[in-house]
Length: 341
Image (tube, rainbow, N blue to C red):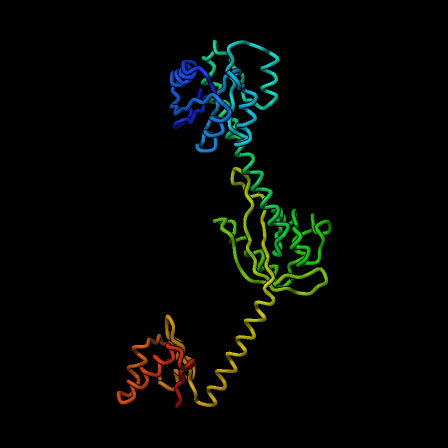
């Protein structure tokens, strides 16, 4: 038997203190480290379960005014997975079957406690496996929900480029239904002028198998193009064998349009400043000069500028006034500072 590492928190439902200690002794004899508590009524059981965490419950079958069936029902109300092992003073096949059908993990006789360590180990392992399976199922369900509700297109494809999965986001983005897209080549959404780019991304992915991120263009079913940010990742099996690739695509058409508008505005501002010979600068964590500002101060464009270097360029007679004007701007009195040639 593979012994459980760490201390086992053991709750014993037993009206006999001697029998409870025999249970603990049997577990320590096989090398289990046990921390335990004995309760003998429904009220004591509820109090123990509500205030402490337990790994295993051992229960006598029958106690004065209480029994294992009631204890199991109470325990399952607190924790549906906690191992519950019944220990009876006499064999009753019908009682044993009834307890196992009700959800008890095992049913032992007090005269056969040599099986107790194995029963506890097996019950703990079954609980670990059940909880791990539930977590995996919950995680898979959560991922499935994310995949089905996100606006991003999430696509998987085999090594030969055949589409193997296609989420609702891909349907909305590219116009192909899942039924139409599955088993088609990924080339249905890759423009002819981006085929080489895609092949190069795949080739870069294989040596280190890290995701490739890049902005590119894809094509919808109606032939229109869409700007996307792509994350291309490998799909591996349990032995790290490459099975295919996954793609997450996000529509960045509006983002690019907004950036282009900002760039056009910046270009127009630069042109206006050049015509008017007006330079501007901003100061927050660092100083940023406009192109015309560099020309006015006769500093090579792109040179790093600090407030100290800016003040060094101010005529000594004007220095205090300029410092005061900057402080007023920082205090909110003025919202901008300009340098005029």
